[in-house]
Image 1: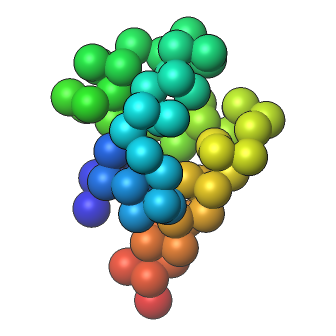
Image 2 (image 1 turned 45 degrees about the horizontal axis):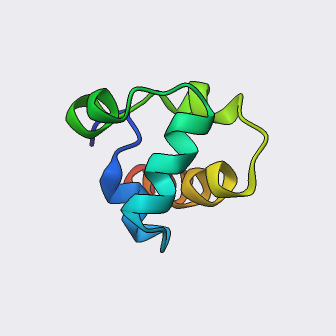
Length: 68
């Protein structure tokens, strides 16, 4: 598994693309780049936001499941 948060994680967290795109704009993230390459979890951790935390929970649970 790649060490990036992707649209897969956003959708698995139950969030829609429209809301995620608005979130990206609000947080000065390049949406197109995010769709192509994902984003570092560390950058998402810097954002104090409920959506970010929801996506991080999905990402972290997935990482933990792979390690176990």
